[in-house]
Length: 140
Image (cartoon, rainbow, N blue to C red; front, side, top):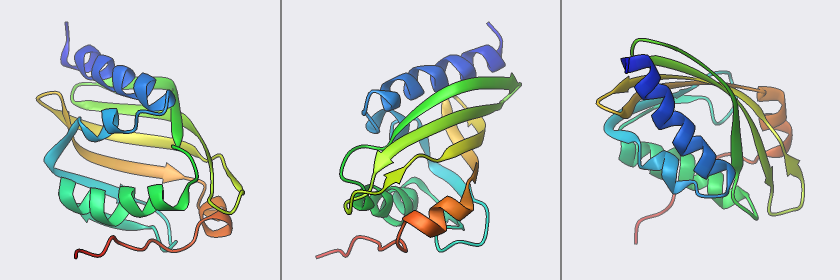
């Protein structure tokens, strides 16, 4: 198999589990030195460096806004070499009952079966309209 097909298979498996509400599947394929870039000019738009920062400053605060898991279902994969683009549809509800159904294009660079860089393209108007600002978890 080629690197592109191996990387697509890894992402396809993780997204299948994420669509079923198992967000941990996606976290498990983030490299420790991963970089996640959320584009735009929202309070969520930032470059998150390292898996710990991604969990603490992005995914944790995002999860805290939802009353249920954000089920992200992949619809299309385009791969070449170590790069895989994933077109996906999210489905969640905020704690105050508002639907959050964002569309994504996630461009992932893979290394040794793990995501080392992810650039997220999303509906930033929806982010501004539905989500509050990210609030990182406070360490006790």
